[in-house]
Image 1: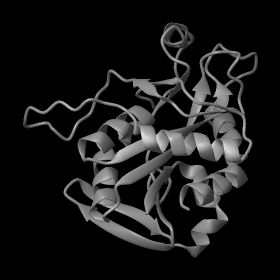
Image 2: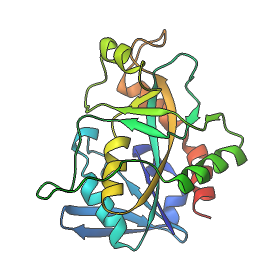
Image 3: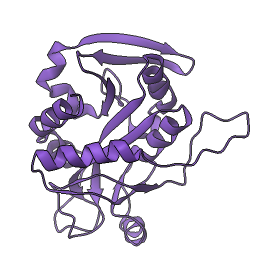
Image 4: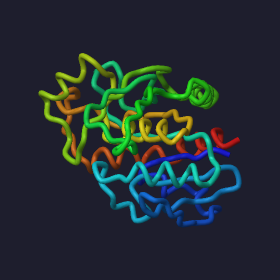
Amino acid sequence: MRAIIGGTSIFSLPLLREGRKRKVSTVYGEVSVYLLKDCVILNRHGAEKNIPAHRINHSANMMAIKSLGIKEVVALNSCGSLHKEIEPGTFIVPDDYLNFDVISIFDNRIKHILPGFSPLLRKLCIQVLSELKLPFRDKGIYAQTRGPRLETKAEVNFLKDYADIVGMTLAKEATIAKEVGLRYASICSVDNYANGIGSGGLSYRLIKKNAERRCEIYQRIIERISR
């Protein structure tokens, strides 16, 4: 069994009606999950969908998953494109990430993990996207910013020399997953151009609206991942 972590849009998925909601207590806090037949689904923004990206309790989320005896996590992440050729509507399976606002469960002892994604889970993600015939890239670098605000044009102009996509969740989530001993990979949905890249305007409402349009696709992805 695998855990699947997503954002607020996954709460619209029909498959959640089949799940049993459960609260899991950890030393880092309480987490709500949905227990399905073939997978566990966790909303990183909380059961009430009201936790902003910079306040997500990644340590509690990952420890809750581990306490359920699960060893593998596939995350669904919304992101912005840093390059015009990476168009909204594309999926990316990142192979590396940038994040300088690092968090860790090792606050009181010296321990250094080597960050990275699970090669086996990345292969699974690529296989799923290929089977579903979705437009995707099999590698890319994700840059994480802190939030809650969107990035300035100057920040985007800097980041695009080093990364392909930008968001507010993946890197910290992947780091904590590695620290607690979970295998982790992500499927990133490019839902907009980053600030200054595209010709249109940019707002949280637009990003959320574009992400919600993916619900049917997310359902199919989850069904394949949890087989």
